[in-house]
Amino acid sequence: MTAIDLDEDNIDESSPDRPTTDKTANSDIGHGGWTVLRGPLTDERIADATEEIAREYGLSVNRRGAAGLQLTGPDGLVAAVRWRLLPLAAPDTLSHHRPEVAQVEVLVEPVNPTAAIRKLVRVLRQRGLAFTNAELGGIVESMPLLRYYSDPAPVFDRWALIFRDHYVENSVGFLLAMQRVGIPAQWIYVLDKGDRTRNRERVHATFLEQGYHSDLLDNAAINDPVSHLAELRRVRADMDQFIARAHAANRRILLVDDGGLLAMGYGAAGAPMPFGAPLSCGGLARVWPAISPTLATI
Image 1 (spheres, rainbow, N blue to C red):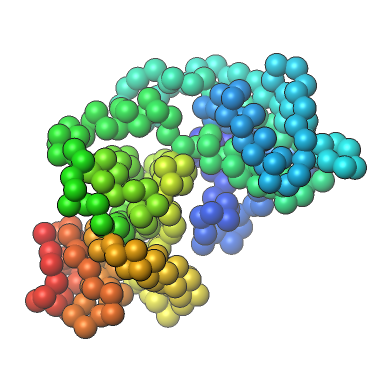
Image 2 (image 1 turned 45 degrees about the vertical axis):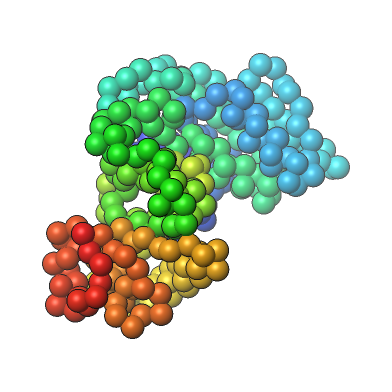
């Protein structure tokens, strides 16, 4: 049995939703067939996730007591899902508050590790990792300037956002503010810089739960493109598709970037997809030698 702890020190980073450069990462299902997940999940969220997967794959869900479910198909039992409460844990964010949802331990025991069960494990992991409503509220409260300046604004009605920075709590707060001012979640595209920041997998899961596109573009790939051609091509192709969809929907694109995307040519004079690009000081230093005088910067 393999335990996949949702705590930061024991993260399995191999989810297909988030490419990883770790060639030793494990698969979604534990080596013995069983998978254990731990996180702030309610009975309702576990049941909802299981029923969603059952509908998608044509399976049935049966209750087995107060904290158990069985997935069955035409040939009988497919998997059992059981869970139990864990002791309350200390807050896992910078803000101090009591968790709104108790920690639970979820056991997924498949008869065979089918595609349906692998997806169920990924969905439960994502929902268990994502910040709870209380944690998100604490992040918003800890950033009063963003809260003050994030009333809905018609000027953002026709914009899309590409954001690349560290996956930390203030990035969550910033993107929630951009949602509040009027950029819909489906028009927010987020890239992690690849730093091993605390709770980066929780931030990634939160972005996915919010409805953003969340991916990884490691600084190593930008600094040494020759050694990371496949990764760069994949991310650039995916991001270019997002840009094309945004332009087809008559949306302008705002790029909030540390300089890495600009170093790749986005936003330069004559580029087929120019941007407005607010930059950090570090980002300006990275691209200053080649920056275009026509590039909009803040």
